[in-house]
Image (cartoon, rainbow, N blue to C red; front, side, top):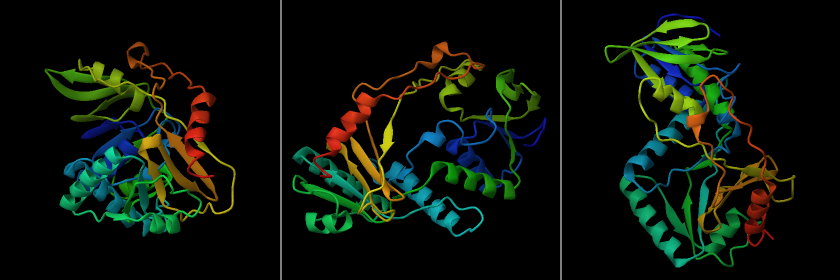
Length: 307
């Protein structure tokens, strides 16, 4: 923790996004940067709960190239023995179970080709060799991206912190931002529970609290936190860390290895959401209770594919 009352740029929020922004600013030559995090450590809230999938195949060239830049950054970090994110570049399989999804994948491949991302359709036999435990009988198409992978989000965040610190960025944890200070339409600082920090620019990376941060300067940020769940299986034969990430959009599922077990998550049709309007900035966010019915549904969707 570093105490300061002056910085050119203040970043509010010490998750993967806030710390990634801090690193990018430092790389661009901006080293008078202070990141403020309310928890005792960075990556303590939303980031710590993320599944860590890294996929570059997107539906626009711009988003694809942004994801490609992220992969290049992770690969560069991985060369640093003291500050790497545990990046596993194992590739990814994207599975189509219906003709409409095949058409969508063809469009995504066209976008990838335009962006310069190497993506190929592979046959079911080749896919089976990459994922021996999976049943490909119902699969109509498989889109393969060799440069995709996964990592641990907390490790990535700490790598961002280490690299940003080397370039002069300061980090102040256990400090709550109470208000963004504005004078004549310009940001002049932030008020925290540790005192005022004077600055010229504020970057709002406060996660579920971002709504209240924006509201403090009169902006309405249209975000609604939505619960997203995954489960981790027990260890099992043929589940290895080198398995590719696996996405099955028609079953709303994703899979990746977790040591010798499996992470399985999905997208609920009616996810629990929490409107941030009614949660004051000083309050703790409500605890999210595990929904075993939703997790059970994921398992049922997964069963036909991994007998």
